[in-house]
View 1 (cartoon, rainbow, N blue to C red):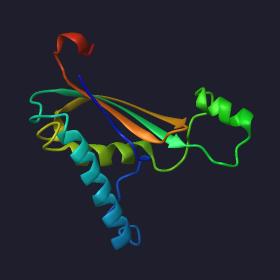
View 2 (cartoon, rainbow, N blue to C red; view 1 turned 120 degrees about the horizontal axis):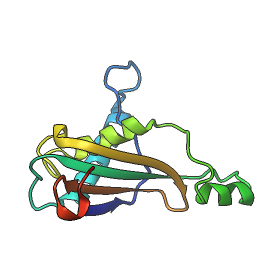
View 3 (cartoon, rainbow, N blue to C red; view 1 turned 45 degrees about the vertical axis):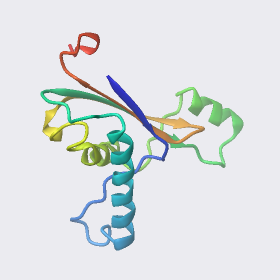
View 4 (cartoon, rainbow, N blue to C red; view 1 turned 180 degrees about the horizontal axis):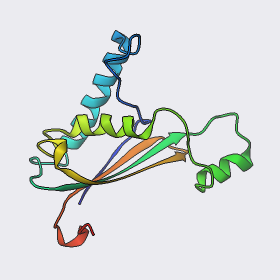
Length: 140
């Protein structure tokens, strides 16, 4: 299993089909985000994995500064989870786009996926990738 952390808040993929969403500023920000993830991942992967792959991603979001201490404590204990934008599938799309040809040859190789959204004191993204069939991480 290969694990790495991206010390940035989660960002969803930018849709090119919606008018007004694909602005030059958003496009540049998204491309920089994907490049940063790719640079971090390249340090972990000597070559793309082959065959079926499993992925686990934990998206940790910053909590609103206006929250009370009680609400913050509940959020950090996962009693309150982020039902906020961006949608989790768009966040996954951004990670998968960045990992193509680095962690795997194509994201069609991903056959198992677990994702979660949390609140955290430290916004980040934790990614775990492994080949199906590794003795220590067999998918049932």
